[in-house]
Length: 347
Ligand SMILES: Cc1cc2nc3c(=O)[nH]c(=O)nc-3n(C[C@H](O)[C@H](O)[C@H](O)COP(=O)(O)O)c2cc1C
Ligand SMILES: CCCCC(=O)C(=O)O
Image (cartoon, rainbow, N blue to C red):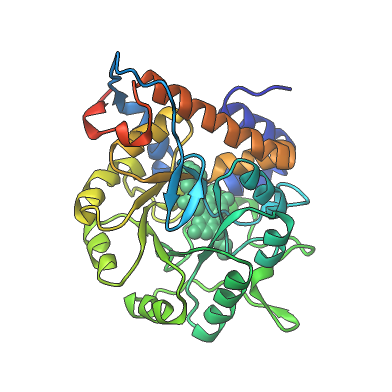
């Protein structure tokens, strides 16, 4: 069945998934105010198209930290893909490679990062990391990501503790089923838990900086002051994110956080964004407000659950087609033609 919107992919995924797994993927923290705000904020912003600008030949590619993507939409790191499809992250990576975009592999992937890379030749992979209090194990995981050919590390900073996910509490979904595990966490004959620790600080990030020559992206920045501090720690990009509303509830919508962070960064490094991107027009709004690219989390999971590799490929192709059409309708030939003056609030 042909699906015309990301919303239809979500409906198809919901039909196929175990209800507790659907809730894990869809849900967020607390009252899910931030989950809803992420999408609603995009809907409230209006686009002011320019006309008669002779913008015939479209160009939607971006280069980020040396990685090339054919569109400014990346695959955000999301955990547990094998709950959605038996091939799990292998399928996602193949679809990302076919779409010529970057996949950020989660540290909590259910296929080891080396196996993800092996399954998807040509895929541009970055690796998401939760810094572990045991720094020697962080290093072990970093070496696995490097050996797999990942081109950047994305350090998730918004998780000093797991968010309060009430759907999961109600469903008793607290861990993966027996046959699955976080494969990157293997340590000899055991699998370590991913530790979220409030004791982590910029000092740990400095040590990571010494540990690897890969570019480091800090993900989960909401406060402009933290964006400024990040610059002092040699990071290569900032990802504005509230973790899709899954960590601290009532953090403002990601796109509403963006302008202040772009101003604080002042062009020193690229600013990325995730949270609530569901339409090509959402992508354009984020880019017009200064993001270098965006990433999508749940839409990829919906594609994977609805149709495996082909489902993810369809989701990414749909987003690309929407970006191209909206860009043309805005009178732009390339992403750099977008500027903040083309976004009006409220719609
Ligand atoms: C099911 C699920 C699992 C996630 N797992 C991770 C993760 O392992 N690491 C991480 O940094 N972010 C994780 N995230 C957050 C995403 O990277 C991203 O910030 C968020 O999904 C963006 O919002 P969106 O789903 O509205 O696109 C997860 C999100 C979801 C929905
Ligand atoms: C330990 C896995 C964490 C996955 C995650 O970040 C999420 O569910 O949002």
